[in-house]
Every structure is written in structure tokens, then in C-alpha cells.
Amino acid sequence: MRIGIVADIHANLPAFVRVLTKLQEAGAADQLWCLGDMVGYGPWPNECLELLQTHSHLCMPGNHDWGVIGRTEAALLNDAALFVLNWTKEQLSRPNWTYLEALTLIQKVPDPPFTLVHGSPRDPIWEYLVETKDASPCFRFFDTPICLVGHSHLPLIFRKAAGKTTVSAPADGTVLPLGADRLIINPGSVGQPRNGDPRAHYAILDTAAHTISFHRVVYPIVLTQARMRDLDFPTMLVQRLDVGQ
Ligand code: ZN
Image (cartoon, rainbow, N blue to C red; front, side):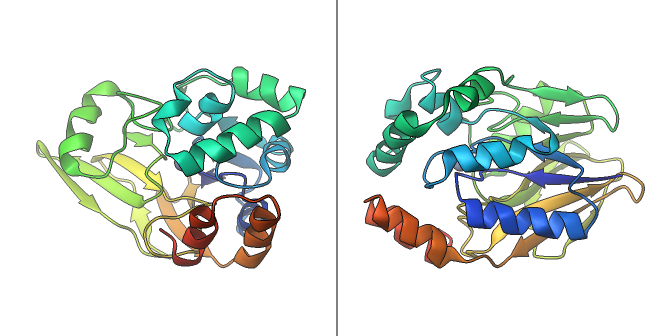
């Protein structure tokens, strides 16, 4: 079985559509694992949530998703993010609001055994895992071999072996064999990457081959930017899509 892994779609419909097409081509679109932040920053919150729900999927809430429905302190976001969050709040359909309210913070998949969460297994909504000093203590907070996270918008692999935690940044096309080591993995962001590569990022779990592969795909950024400009979204949010920051 192949499972598509996506995170931080952030209401960027052209990016999400492109990723879904690639997952379809790879036979990995029948089951999706979505690691939160479907909304925020981008201009198509309802459309992205509705498209996600047309697939068999598991989904955890992110800080933007919970910020919109008032479950977490939205004031922790910067002004630009807050602007779009308030706009999203006005736009979100009742069924999508109900969908976000029903999401659970952490999901443990029994087979194959995985833990899925947005931020970290220690703090599912807000903790960013970027450095080994932050990731290392988090291995105590889940009991499956691998935990998948989003939130930082950076494709990263944290590995715990012989008591030591190391980190690496997978390139486009990296195939990671899943062995005995415990891992925390971020597939990168679909809708707003921050690793200097503006392409949409995603990953594929192949349960037969025991691998996770990392991928990036070009999408029509100008379409997303045009709609953001039409809606008077903060310029900084429009421009950052060009550079992947
Ligand atoms: Zn995010």
C-alpha cells in the first residue's frame, strides 16, 4: 500500500491539486495522512478542506486550524497570519467548521504503526521541531517507531540511534529505508514551504517496500498570488511563495 503524506497545505489550492495529481500517478492518493494546517495564509480554505474530504484520509488539527475555530490563542500568530486567520473565520462554511472541530490532536495508526501530529508529540499544536535539542526529548512522548509531524514547513528527518539524535534534510527524490531506528519525520509543506524551495512538498509511505520517499513539485504560484492580491492579503505573504521562505 502507498500512503500520501501531506502537511501545511495552508489553503493553497493550486499546490494541493498538483500534489494530489502526483500522488495519483504514484498510486498513493487512495489514502492520505494530513498533518494539519489545512487553512491559514492562503486564499482557498473551504476548497482545500472539501478536496481533502473527497479522499480517504486521516487528519490532525494545526495551530491555524484551531486558531480559526477559537480553540487556541490566535494572538500568538504574527500580524500577517492573523489577518488571514480572521478572513478565514468569515469564509469558513459551517460543515468545514464542524469538520475542524471534530479533529483529534494525535492519532496513533496501528498498522503500519505510526504516530501522527501537527507540531510535536509533546505539544501537538505549537511546538516547532527544527533542531535536535528540541526533537530529542520528544522521542519519549510516542511509542511507535515513527512519528510524522508538520508545522515547521521544513522537510526534516530526526533519527534516534544509540541514544543520540541526528537531523538531516531530505532532497527531492530521497528514498528513506525504514529500519530499526526511531524517527520523527516532517514531509515539508504543500502550500508554503520555508526551506528556500518554492515547490510544493509531500512524501509517500510505501508499506511493502518499507520506505518513505520525499518529493517536490512545481505548481502555478502566480494563480495563488493573484487571488491573494485580489483579496488584499499582506504583501509579505504573497511574496514569500516565490522564494519558499
Ligand atoms: Zn503551518
